Length: 244
Length: 318
Ligand SMILES: Nc1ncnc2c1ncn2[C@@H]1O[C@H](COP(=O)(O)OP(=O)(O)OP(=O)(O)O)[C@@H](O)[C@H]1O
Ligand SMILES: [Mg+2]
Image 1 (cartoon, chains in turn green, blue):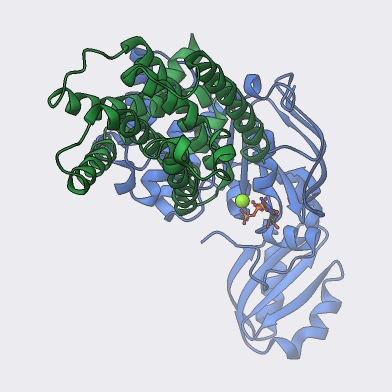
Image 2 (image 1 turned 180 degrees about the vertical axis):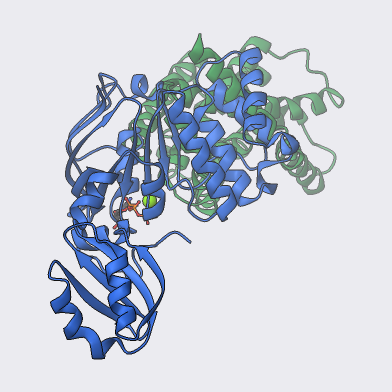
């Protein structure tokens, strides 16, 4: 019970202090919007919104979660308020889960921004909603954990930002968000399959377009494997690096 | 009863020992002071005791709990006030306190009540709604102390509670610390102000370069440092000319000339003032003032640690 009170209040504080702040909310909106606009300018007329949607959603989640968690944790560690969390009689797992949950929820919210916008422009009735929700959730969790990995690897806020980008921008191109993996140069392909977002995007493609590169169950399975590995690694590093 | 037991505690950073094999016990209900110069290892020790840092060796028991094995259990009965505030800048005083209480599993109604009470006690109720980042230094320190005790801990760790704040706030904080002791809390505090240690601590451990060089009560320390009785006199007249004559006159006391207008009488026994003044008067020296001189903790510190006052590492209270 007392763990639950702590969990809920950490989550609530993060949402209020970080995720509901206007500059942060705009991340999830500005980025997909400008990308869509770019596509429209590049090839006006024959724009297939459905075709764009899985990539846009993946991107919104990726950009909404990774740096948010990395930056807020690093920020709190610099300001030392993070010590307060480490000093509280709550398990490290509860603490990490509380921290992750805010970012995951934020990521999920971000994913639905392009979806809602698309609903004004096209017919979304063919979408497998259960699979969309599952896919978005898995992408959000894995991207958040990536942010956590960044957070435990750096000391400074600007490092958190830089390191997040170091992962994110290559992932935009390697994970089939905009360039289908089939069309990537052969030497880059193996790299794609080492990244969780590749599988996440494929789940989103399956749910929105009905066609995908891999079997959707395999992709879901792979996402769980990545999430497990990332959680384990972060948790191990946290133990080593946050308690000096 | 010892409520904190520390045995052979060590902390190495690389091959440098910030804490080098220290052992001590804190009795329930006492204020135990850790006194040492900058870099002595005070904060390093506290951080290990509160579970923020892992020791390189040794044992810690708090209230019967092995802190190294059951850190979280131990953390539920301790309160911590770090040397720098660790509250949330964007949140106001009231929300900060409520949030801290929630981390200890305290329900909404109860934590709001406690937060209000503490804000009142610390005279911060006027700024309860102000964001923490707009607090003054003294207010910040007070709110940090309030946050450290909101879950009603048995033992409170304070790292330099009065460093960097003005005399009045420091006095308020010392009074608060003494009030907490009256409530039955055990308090561990670090300081490099000798007078603070003297004023609030029951016992003091001197720590220098990661080692405890002495643990003692304040009064024991005083006695040990200087068993002699000293009187300082302010005078006018030529002290040097009468020096030899005086030495013969009082065989159990000796005189030290401090400067042109003051001298010191030192004796094993308590000295009677009148004969001294009379004798000085007869030799043409007027006495304006007489004062018993007690050894200061600073003298004791210098004596025990060999660290001089002049190198600026030991700071005396304003
Ligand atoms: N994380 C760390 N890595 C390396 N050395 C450290 C670390 N933390 C502390 N030290 C060193 O350990 C020694 C003790 O530091 P500590 O902060 O415990 O001193 P202190 O007694 O609290 O001093 P002050 O009065 O200045 O607060 C110092 O020499 C410090 O440089
Ligand atoms: Mg210190």
